[in-house]
Image (cartoon, rainbow, N blue to C red; front, top):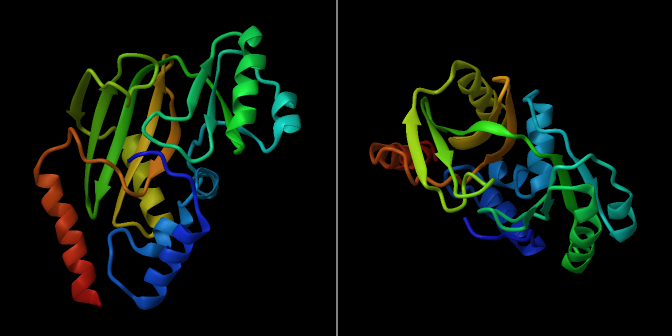
Length: 218
């Protein structure tokens, strides 16, 4: 998915799809609940999942008051695919990054940087589930991915993914986790329109079957 800045027209389109009863996967109600990064994080927190701790700043004054020991990650607005994200390695780097964020004219989320041992995406389609580890060229595992490997979903992550599916009422959902050096997992985000690259080809038929099932129930 490319960079997306939430727009009232996009939200209105989702509401129209929902009102008209047009079948889609995921349902428009799910897409609306995860329409923005902040609403997505709120949904995951309400579902009781181990969401990464974060602060949010709206406006230059609030942004400059944020205090979090470096290293930390800054994410601007609702961008995806590694865009709009910066790693602040030292506290001395923060003022210059803050200047750039001011020019973006959007809210910013600030998270601790996790020196992870692996990045894991859990992907659920209906009753089936897959998991994949990813390794990127830099600190972003989903950018310039050099290696990916399909694995058996870790039971803990499978349970979290099922909980998110139930909470949202989703047909398909991708959850991105980081596993720290001590083995603990932290949820970075959920994706209501997850990419399927790297997963088995048979998964695409499962996605199509979810849509067919929605159309049959209409």
